[in-house]
Image (tube, rainbow over the protein chains, first blue to last red):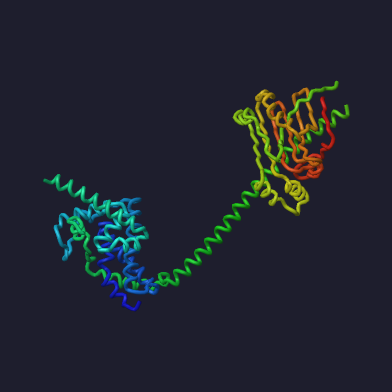
Length: 164
Length: 102
Length: 179
C-alpha cells in the first residue's frame, strides 16, 4: 500500500468513527476506538494489499473493537453521556427526532444483529459482504436483518401509535 | 426493495464526522508511537515471542514444582502406609512368636 | 494357660481377583466420624509410581522400598483410633472377611488375645505367586485395615526393616495361633 497514511485517515475517518458511534452511541468512546483502529492500521499497513482490503480490514477491526468495548462496559457499566447530547451532522438528512429514536433502537439490539444493521444501513453493504466482515453465514446475516427490521417496525409502530 | 423504514434507517445510520482535529490527533498519536519502539510490529513480535518463552518456562517450572510437591506428598503417604503395615505385622509376628514359645 | 481364640483384627488388603481394591464395608467407612484419628492412605496406579520415583536410589532403605513398590498396583491403609473401647462393632468386619474368603485368598495368620487384640493376615495367590496381601488388626481402641495389591513376597517386607521399620516377619508358613 503506497497511499500516504494521512490520506487514508482522511478518507476513512468518518466510516470508522460512525461504525463505533452507532454501535455505542458515545462520541468520546467512538473517537478513542477510531484512533486506536487507525494506530493499528498504521502498524499493519504492510500486510494490507489494496484499498479494498484496507476498507474491509477497517470495518472488521472497528466492529470487533466496538463489540469488545461494549462487553467491557457491560461488566463495568458507565453512564453514556451521548444519549442526552446532541450529535448533529452537517449532512444529517431526515427527521432528527426519528433518527435519534432509530439510533437508540438499533443500539438496543444484541451485538451481532446490531453490527449487521450498522454495516447494512450505514455502509450500505450487501449481506454477502457483511457475512465476510463478521465471519458469519450469509443466511445468518439475512436472518438478523429480517428479525431486526421486524422488531424495529413493531416498536416504531407502537411508539407512533402511542404518541397519537 | 427498500421500504420507508429502511430508508429511515439509512438516514439515521448515516456516516458522521468525528470532531474537528481528529485526523491531526491520529497522526500525532502515530508519531508518538514511532518514538516508542514497543509499538512497532517487529518489537511486538519479539516481545510476544519473549513473553511466550517466559510463560512456557514458567509453566514448565510450575508443573515441575507441582509434580515435585505431589511426589513428595505421595512419598510421605507411602512411608506412612509402610510404617503402619510394618507396625501391625511386627505386632502380629511378636504374638505368633510368643505363642510358639508357650 | 493357652489362650486360644482367634480374633482377628486385620483387614487389609483385599487384592481381589484382578488386583482390585477390597470394598470397605459402609459401617467401617462411617467410623471416621467417631474416631479421634483417621489415617486414610490410598496409593494406586500412577500415584504409587510417582511416590516410588521420589524414593532415592542412593539410600539403601529407600532403594529397597522402591524396588518393592515398583511392582505393586496399589497400597490402601485405613486406620481408626478411638478414645474409648467399644466404639466399633467387630461384626462390622464380617463383610470384609467374606470378601477374603473368595477364591485365591487364604488366611495365613490369625491371632486372638484375651485383651481383644485380634489380627489376621491374608495372602492372595495367583498360581504359585503371591498377588496381594491383606491385614486386619482390630484392637480395642484401634482398627486397621491394610491391603497391598500386586506381587509381594514376605521377604520383600522383611527387607524393608530399616527406615520404614518393617519387621522381619516370616509369613511364609501358615500360622493360626490362639493365646
